[in-house]
Image (tube, rainbow, N blue to C red; front, side, top):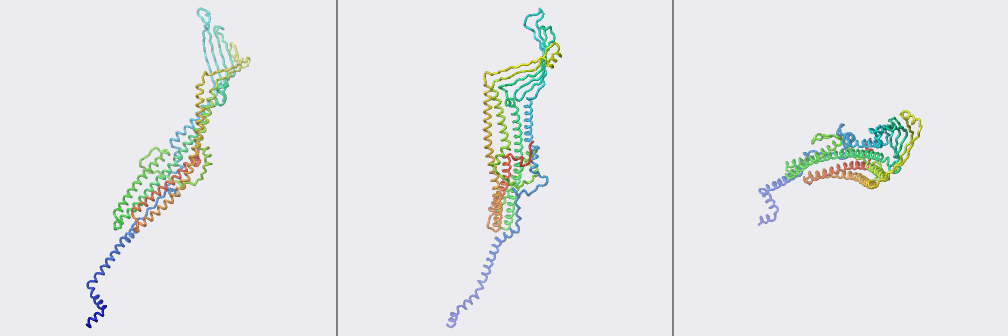
Length: 542
């Protein structure tokens, strides 16, 4: 009992005794649990910290973003690169459209010379010989009355601007026959003869109509040729700008491909250490293949745009795939001041189409005035004044004219009234309607010019704001891609999200390049609408 009571009174000792005996079976269990915990910790570290560390150590450097838009102006393609000014000079020298158009002003000047030719005096010499048998009584059984006549004349003829026609000269007629036993009989005259229309054909309007029309046509040809030059210069500017934008798109496509290739390389390294799945690698590989296609499309587009520029500058051979045309990068678009109200007045003075339309109205007015004059009946004054001579000897008869021995003059009127005026009325009515149509069309053109200038001015402001907005969007997209890449390295993102961020950055870069190119297009278009393209580029059209 004593011993049991003692044992019962000492439970702790009993526990310690049992505890000291227990290690034979319990001691091996605690080291096994510790080992399992350590292995789990190491596995977690390898799954999280290990891939992150290896990815950060083995990842290739990120590709540098391409210089697009205004930033590309710092790039240089060498001293032999084609500049915009040089491209414009080549186009004006070799472009076939400009060459063809250059003939029109020369042709118009030749037509003006033709119109002036109507007032050139002409030296006229006439020599006629005639014989006429009389129908009267027979002189003898074998003879009838016979008259022979020889006419000589030498005169200076011409037309005056108010419609008068003149002839200054001398005439000589030798008339002989059976009536004077065929003896010479010279009748001479020296003086001036005139014909002056008093109704139809009278005045400067009717006489100078063809000359005025020719001069106006010459002005129209000059303005149309100027318009051709402006259009050609603008086309070169736009083609040059399009080529730079197309090559920026190639740079953007290649940069996007490089980003996708970097992501693929990183995923393949992670797959090697078991830190990612085959699906992520396949997805990254598909993105790389897609970006390769984008590069091919962008390069093809750039080559086609380059051929358009080559055509404008006068080249005749175009290869499907050849060495690229080296061009200098365009600078950033200048910040120009826009005043649509003041520029509209300036456009009316410089726009070739507006000036050509005004000259077209001048032609229609001259045509209408001439048609109205043609409705009048013809009433002409005819007269002559001079001196005559008559003698059997030509020298004596000519001397009488020289000595003004016998004055000779004549005066009269010629009246011609058509029975109907159908032809004249039709022409006059058509000419009047054409004039009214041209005046209405000029008003329509003024409205179109006002609208086009307002629209072009608005595009300048809009594209300026677009450049600023797309620049911010591009910078933010670049920062978002960087952040998404960091989250992927930390295990908090996916390949899909990184690829989407890369696509967003590529789209933002393309939008920025397009906005910069559109800003240059807006300025070129505004200058064309104002008619100041040649002034802006210091060009003269002769």
